[in-house]
Image 1 (cartoon, helix red, strand yellow):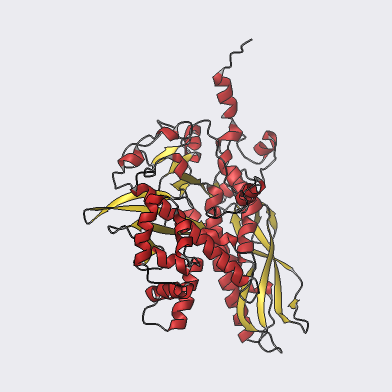
Image 2 (cartoon, one colour):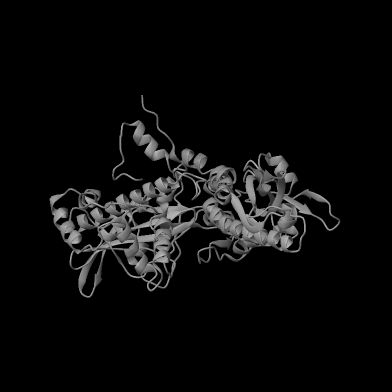
Length: 528
């Protein structure tokens, strides 16, 4: 027996009030539940240059603990505090924001046993976090339609936007190339075709472009941030811990055609040991400096700016004086060497026509940054600014011989201002503009369209014909007809009606763990 399904009924139920801004709300709720604490854990400790009184060379620092976001409140002129609802924020030109509280512990030196001397944990308000209307932190969350009407809200309002100084502002979904994924292309230089394999390596908000390219002599060259010019591939591999020729070749490929190319690269290499490789990088980074400085600078750059997304392999909280620090560093460098080998293999495969160039417009090569991801980037920068201010305030109090107190060292306005300004102006961290926009309230359809808009980072003044074209992989994801005319055509898009947005893996170790459970014994070239 066959049943006819009315697609209009399915569409109406799917495109209900709860689904219009669901991607924005889910993303922001995930930020509140997990990513807010993750950013605080990344900071973890605020170090100072204060020496504890009465003890020689005893440092003072602050440890950060659990973070919690309360419900939005308004403080009146007489000092009274009451719950704040979106309708009141609009009418009184207020910012719909909630206090952020963090547990802080002041540590003043070590005792005779070498244990930290910790004060009692203090729960401190570090600032105000703008709250998305309809999210878990919103006072409207969980209310019935009748209760919403009592508080002056439209029960059909989808939420998914912020209220900053009385204005409703929505965060645009940003479309960008996928990070930590190898992409290949070729460029023309001096009438020669240069084959390139690159990866946007991203870790904790920092994004570094690492490029491996084959020049006219079939030699591989590597470039990445903080290094002027190019580094020879083989010498860089030795600096990362792969000393033997066989190890370097095996890290790239055992294909006979690629072996021919690798022999040419090995002949051009000038370094034979790890020490020589590190000094080769150091001389490039800091010419005419002392040998010790060159070595330290090279190690710092290799550990922080080369493929930073692999730094998750470092055990959390490990310090330089710990016995396991050096083996952990060497393990991460070897992982980076094997990843560079994958880049080199992709480059040679492109030369040998064993793979095609990657289509940048293919949606498998793109990722979307939703409101929660954007707020995570903003909060990370803002918290970093606050920790520097706390450090300054504690050192200032110490210089004036005052009693050190975390509560008085925290100036909540520092964090609040850094969070509000980008939302109010649209000028986001990283130099992007137009990220936050005034919500279009012309009619209900305009609101729905604005909440489901996707913008591209490409310049509006450039042609970008291929990027503006409708791509087959956008089917079911991007609406084929809703895009503005003029310079924004094809660069400003909207979600399809029944789109579902998935979320990436939060735990970086999950994929290797799954592979081990499936029977993989060793990830030789398989650093994820």
